[in-house]
Image (tube, rainbow, N blue to C red; front, side, top):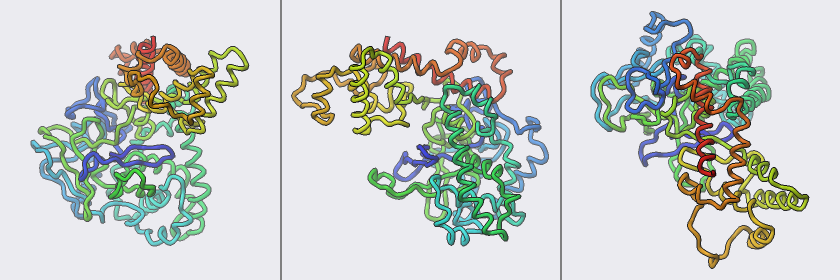
Length: 502
């Protein structure tokens, strides 16, 4: 499945040697409360409420119907084969468009296939030759510029052969990413979650990429592009669209951990990007030489929605990249970050003398040299324990050492003698192990958690009260509900750590 990593890049992880559960850029709404196991037809408190396009009634209006008919006609003309057992609809789905089972579907059945000629990428766009010729000038950290330019051209061209495909997202009104919120709203609703900071970096990088690479390219090709039409505002929307709806094909040798190949560029896959997301998904995308195939991975009942997965993502990541969350307790991949620097700051609070402060700095510098910690690094904590267990275990251990222990540890370059007294292995740092840590380690971890909790503007009990009151919850705006889900999930993890280190 596709998993986002730092820098706007993607890592695709195979869940099976032949079939890849690829994160599609999910519909704004993909989520079954978002994790609806089995994909029930209607949203409940355990599922994310369905979000209608602004101004549109719950039932499909004529414009929506016409757009869908045009899209399905285009699919047929483009050679996209859709099983007679499924249909596209905005009814009976968790959010916006989705794919629903018309009849019972067995495991391994083909739901649809998309010929590679129907995929929109830098290689299939009308301006593919131009992009290939200017490839060197379009290189960027994100690797998305060629597809973004393809999208900018195609979506503003009345002659684009993907015109009917784009008609499903008029003006991109279904994009609910925090990058489109006001700065005040992000800081107020998402304080302490890490989302506001991530969005701030995104916006800086997007503007820099547009001004330094895209705009010069646009100006140098006036017969193809127009700076008045292909604006920074459009570029931002397309970044969000690609972030939420694109796919990335894995390399054939993706299992090779030593492979330093750059990831394949993203591409838009019509029909596949209509599927919503739940962790307990029931379909996966397979990449074949001539086409892409969506296959069922378990039995699907009549009336059940077909779900893909966008990856093992926490709610803060889903909100950041896709514009939705999976209401508690749906998201089984919930996790949160604690800045590595926070552990150092927590340790610094316990220092009383200049000698102790100097020793702490030496320990941190040593951990940095070993690349165990870093200035921009994070420790990741999941529902069942620490996910970056090796890094946090080593950090707690070193920062809690006496001067003599540290000198010996440093002399061995971080290695310990095999004949050292054997103790129970606690390095997994899962929830069962954390209470067994040495008192000094637990205290440092507890102090770190306490410091991390201070970044929020509200407490866990306030979030619990808002979630428990159905009437209050319903009255919240979508942005308020999503932000609440993110804050609540993170605080649950932190408070669990407080209990484990008591």
